[in-house]
Length: 441
Image (cartoon, rainbow, N blue to C red; front, top):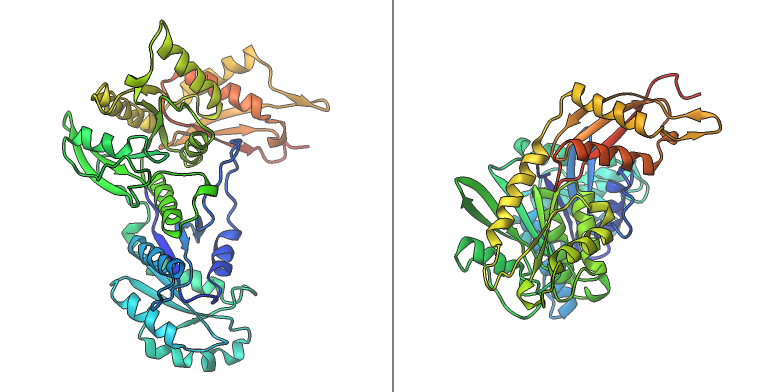
């Protein structure tokens, strides 16, 4: 399910990034044991009063400029506005209303989106009305005075933001299975979309980086509905020096957030790279289904067990996502391309599967008998009860005596036992640990 999106825009140096950090800074995210997994700094998720949403920070908007970098920053902000459900327009209370603010306001009116006007750097609440008075002329209703640096009035602002989102935007779930095609530039993502749909829906070029946006393509296969989301290639950050390309990375990450299954395409000749592992980490961290597609398989010289050995190597290097199946294909020759959709269909079923509490606890009891839980300083981990409490991805709650005794290795052991008993291929499964009150002594 996707989350509503807030875009923070405004002219340079009004405090957008400071506010971005304040909005996301108190969120307590689950930390995965996956090296190198981190979201791009201009895209993050947060929540307020139980409502989760995404936040996008943007560079300062200079409406009238011939400077290449400033023009790209303006275009980046326009892309963010297009993605957003609500736009937060930020101005500087110390400098007052400027011509540049008026130009940004003109740009915002054309979007037709909900706009919240925020006046930052209002450090004295007693002078707030006097400071924001001039900003009423912009026509965006009552301005919200804040101090991002001092956290003044941030709660009231968050209330306004959440009220501004369409009610149906929380937990939107479109029909069918949404599949994001992800990977580095020039591995065949757009070609795969075109081959599956038998239409030239996406521009294909040998020039890496042709796809700058994410493109949704509805698609029907064996009477089932799918949406294929082609994304911009994700490069190493050291190579992302173009602000538009950097924002394409944000769009790709947002596509991962709103899809059900990620199809990670890798180049058979180049093999699995560190960047591929990082992209797989994005999908794993987001709790999405994951399928590895090795493209350009026609270019590999085959010997006995070539495919088996290649797959073993991938799984050995992707230990955190060893649950992901691997499909070998040549999009150019249309080799096994529809196997990709067949696998995605099965992964979607696995993500929705529910295990009865009785069966689950039977598996856990057998696992504990086969391998004793860890202990520390004379105290041993006790598992009292387990239950599945969610799907997409499957989420399991364990009632235990002490979280600190649940070592990562034992959690992985329990995960493996659950996977041996039930077909969760292609999807991560998540655990939460609940201590019995009074047991941790």
